[in-house]
Every structure is written in C-alpha cells, then in structure tokens.
Length: 512
View 1: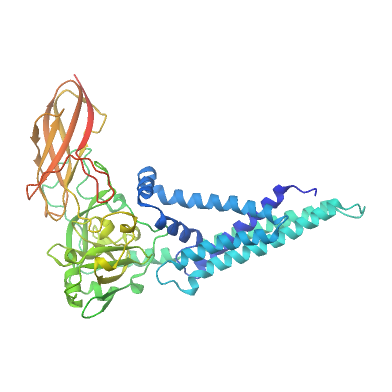
View 2: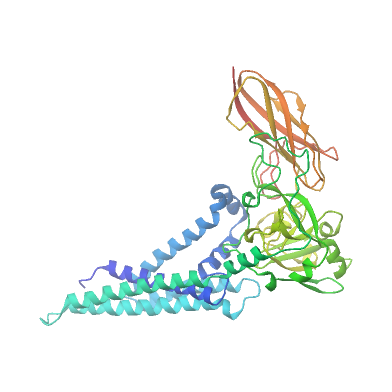
C-alpha cells in the first residue's frame, strides 16, 4: 500500500463533517429544535452528577454549555478520523462505529419528552451521509492504492489521486453548503424575534423605579437590573423559539377541571406587575447570580383555583418546551405572594433567553424549583409521585430562598484611604423581607447599616454604613436580619443541596 493512513483518516473526517452538516440542515429544514450534537449535549448534561454540574458552572460560568458542545465536537472529529483509518481494513467495524454514534443520538432524542418521528430524522440523515460519503471516498482511495501497486505501465497514479482529492474537495464544499443551508433555514429564532418585536401587551407598563430604593453609590449593583445584564442559568443548548400564536399551557393532573390556555387567553386576563428579585441556588456567598426586574404577567393563584386542585395535591410539576422540569410547592403558587406566568420583563415582552413568550416567576423560591422558562405544561400532583431535573442531581426538593447579603463596595483586595470609609451593598430574602443589615470590622462589634426603601418584601434592598477603619489590612463582614428577626447564619455551607450560607467577607488595605 503506497497511500498514507492519513488519507484514510482524512476521508473519515470529511465523511463525519458531511454527516454533521447534513443533520444540522435537516433539523433546520424540518423545524426540529435541536440538531443531534445539541440534543446529545443536553442529554449528557442531564446525566451529569450534581457536583460535576456545580463545578462546571463555577469554572466556566456562562460558557459551560459552549465548553461541552466544543468538547463533543472535538471528540467526534477524533472518532471520525479513527473510523476512517479503521475502514481501510475493516469496513464493517467503521460502519459499527457510525451505528454506535448515531445510536447515542437516537437515545438522547428518545429520552426527550414526547418525541415525534420527525425528531429522529436529522440523526438518520446524518448517519446515511456518513456511510455514503465514506464509501465514495474509500472507493477512490482503493483505486489509488491499486494503481500505485500496479506494475502496468499504463496505470496513472496521478489521475486516480486527482480524483480522490476532487472527491474530498467536493464533499467538503457540500458540507459547507449544507451548513449554510441550515443557517438560512434556521429562521425560527428570527420569526420569534420578529413576533416579539411587534408584540404589544395591554396592561404592561414601563418600569417606574420607586423613590429612595437606591443610594446611587458607584460600584453598588443598580437596583433595577437591565434585561441584558440579568443572569442566565438554564439547561437549553438551543433556546426554544416559540411564536405567541404557537404557545399553549396545559394544566392537568390532580384537578377538578383540566385547563388549556393559549397566549391570547392568557394576556386577556388581568395583568399583575411587580418588582421581584430572582437568585440562583448556585449563587455562592457574595456571588452575582442575582437580579431585580419589573415583571408583568398573570397570577397563577387565580388560574389554578379555576382548575380546582384536589385536597391531597401538594406539588406542581412544571415542564418547559425543551423538556426541563421542576417540582414546585402548590402552596407557593396559590398563596398571597405574586407568583405569576410572566409575559414581560422591564416593560418589554420577555427576551427569548429569559423564556419568551411565557415563563414562571415565584418570589421566595430558588429558580431550580420554580422559574420555568418557556413553560408549556403544569401537572398538579404530589412530591411523592414525581422527580425533577435538579432534584435528581442532589438538590433539595422545596428550595426556599435563604437570607443573604453582599458587600459591593469596596471590592475584595481594594486599597482604600484609612479613616472614614463608606461600605455598601445589597441584601435579600424574598417573600420575607430584610429589617436590618450589620457590618463588622476585624471581628469587632456589629455596626448597623442604613437601609434604602423597598416597594415590597420580594426585592433586594441596598444598604450603606460609614466605618472608621485604621491603617493596615482589614477584614469586613456583612450579615442581614429579616423581618421575623432571624439573623443570617455565619455557618459556611456549599450551594449543594439547597443554597450557600455564610457571611460575605472581604479583605481591604487601608492606607494613610
């Protein structure tokens, strides 16, 4: 054999890329939300143990999904090259490898909620083009090898080699065209963005920031978090793109009457609006996975009351359009708090990344048990009868928000002038409220801070205090006290299983 094994590896790599590109194009043309790579990535993430997920979020922050997708693609590229080399001697083994790769995607699709036959089509298309492309390239490689080995003076190695490279170039161009077709055909997001841009919801008003909620201290988080700056945590590798006309919510299970709401039905109801702070259970002490926004929507209490939950029901299993789910205490959706099906954020229809057209907001609960983006299904049930995405990974079942506080200024490690120092930040305990914040210097006495005003107990509150700090390295700590006189604990606990605890502590260097 005169040809290099590298050409066989190249053949496998090109065939693999062609299959991936065609599967992506098929998903776009058939309006399947996820290509095989994305659905495998989501399946991999769903099977990942909770501590590993926590590590990934802490390590890669907002890029955790990108890192996983890039990792899967790199793995596939290596696998394609190896399968190409394998096809040189054992064609059946290369085909078996493709079957295994396609099988993983099929299983990932099958485990999504209510998969249809069309959802499997992109994987089938990709598999077929893997086989066909590799077969074509392998045929030209074998001809090249036979001619190179031949002693026939009429044999033309250059001719057969040229045909092989033409086949490789053609297949690569075909893959590029397929990828471009998929990008052009993938217009679902553009349609959703267009419908969102044109949408006007009666009763939704622009946010009116109340007087006295902010001390306007540079470095302290703005009281209203802009939508573009609001933290993003979800499991969707490709965000669902749903036009309002295509959205509906089914409420069923342990109810007297099943209800199905269209978007038109929902927004025709009375709109409620409120300032509500959301924070993630993965937020570490002093972390920034928190934001405060003006949310507009329809109260869930009235909708669920119409359905008539049975007395023995205590939970609602919420499901997103992408299949993510969570178990929410039924009582939290029906008590006096302003739990809602939100349709707008900061006076505008929800951004797609934040759940357009409809998401759930429940003050006082961490998002992993309540804040379902792209919500399409609510089953009234019992906690004993359900499991949910994050609780399966070790997080607790109920997820009430814990009292917390944070120092925003000065920052950890800052050099500051010795003497009078303004220390400021935020504190929160949604659905209960904050009554006081205290700051400590070098383990000394706790000094009471001044609180800004708040419109309700469901938002964070800004605080500030003027301290006298002596020259040298100093340690600052903060703690909050809620309206029920419970003091924030200094006991250090990790975010898993139900949220971090401890006092936010920073080190500063006071200079004369």
